[in-house]
Length: 182
Image (cartoon, rainbow, N blue to C red; front, side, top):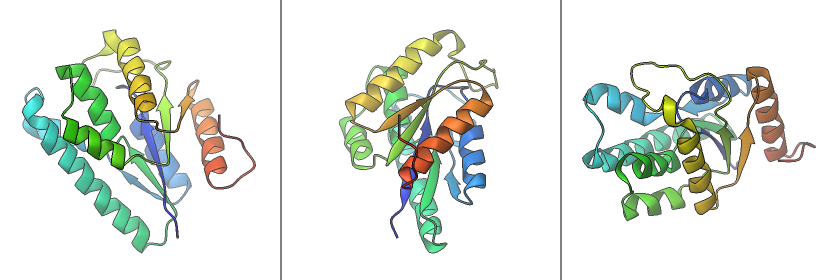
């Protein structure tokens, strides 16, 4: 059975975790959680270049665990709350560049499709988020990163209901439904 991996991506506070978990629940699938959030909470200090590889390795390990579980359970769909392309984008944003090895690893691990969430929802501070005033810049960086890596993606925007409906159309298209990917 072929596994279809769908990554929900975008800048901070756009609803990635919410949409990823809702889609996984609706499709009786697993969702790979965002590794870097737990990593940053454990570190309790700003992330710097020395953290890039531990974050990348942790993300890869976490994805492997969930992929194995999904395969074992006979699932054909796996959702991810971000992936290494997000790591690349944030490395670029925060430190001006990303290690070439991490970029190669990200390129090798591109998902089947990315749902890029727009910044048209309110930004919410949660103690970790720090770029509410730079949302457009970070969003543009995500677009550029997806395009640079040739990752297939669909922009998702609108109300929460419109986002879910748009995501469902994409998933139906990926799974051979009649909806066309946009």
